[in-house]
Image (tube, rainbow, N blue to C red; front, top):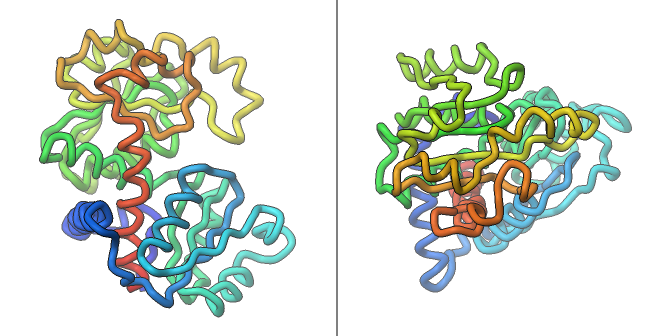
Length: 303
C-alpha cells in the first residue's frame, strides 16, 4: 500500500506519470466532466489547520471523480490528545478508503501512515507540502512544456513549501535558487537529501534577491509568517522587506518569467498587488491546479 507523504518516497517516473494523469484529468474535466472512476470511494479529510484550497480542492476532486469526502474539523478528533494517533488511524481505516491529513507536526502524518490500513495523503505538515509541489510542477509544465533545466527562484522564508519544491526539483530535473535572510534559509538536511536524489547540487543559496532572479524562469514566494508563527510576525516584517516580489524586482528577471505563490498572500508584504494581479502572475491557475494534481494522486491511491 502506498501513501503520499513526501515526494522523496516516489520515483521520478511515478511522479511524472502523476503529472501526465493530472493533465489528462484536467482536460477531461473541462470537456464534459470526469468519469466517476472513484465511485463508491470515500476520503476522510482530517484538519488541524484550516485551509481554503486544501479543503475545497480535495472535496471537489473526490466529488468530480464520483467519490465522497468527509470533512473532520480540529475539534472532532484532537490528534494525539483526546485519542491516540494510532487509534484514530485504525478507526478511520475501517470507515473510509483513504485519509488526507493537514497537520502541524510532520510526525502526526507519518504516525497515521504507520498505523493506517488505508492510504494517507499529506495535505500539509510543518516539514513539507507535497500536494502543493505537485500543483506547482503541473503549472510550470503547462507554462513551458518541459521541466528539465528550468530555474525556479524562491524568495523569502524557506519553509515547508520550499522543502517540497526542492525535492520536486531533484525529481523532475529543474534547478532552484533560494534567496532568504540569514537564519531563514533552507536546512542542510534537505539540501543533502535533494543532492542524494539528483546526484548533483540542485540548489544555489543566493542572499541578494535581485541576483537570485536574474536567470529565473519562475519567481516563487510565500507568506513571511506561516500559521503557528504569529508571535514572530513583527520581527519577520523587519527582516523580509528586501525579499518582496514587486515590479522593480520583476524587471531584473527575464521577460518570460512567471510569478507563483501558494496562497494565501499577504498583499503588500511578500508580494505587491501589481505583481499578483499582473500579466506575469500565475497565482490563480496555480491554485486551480491543486484540484487537478490531487485528483491524479487520489486516482493513483484509491482506484
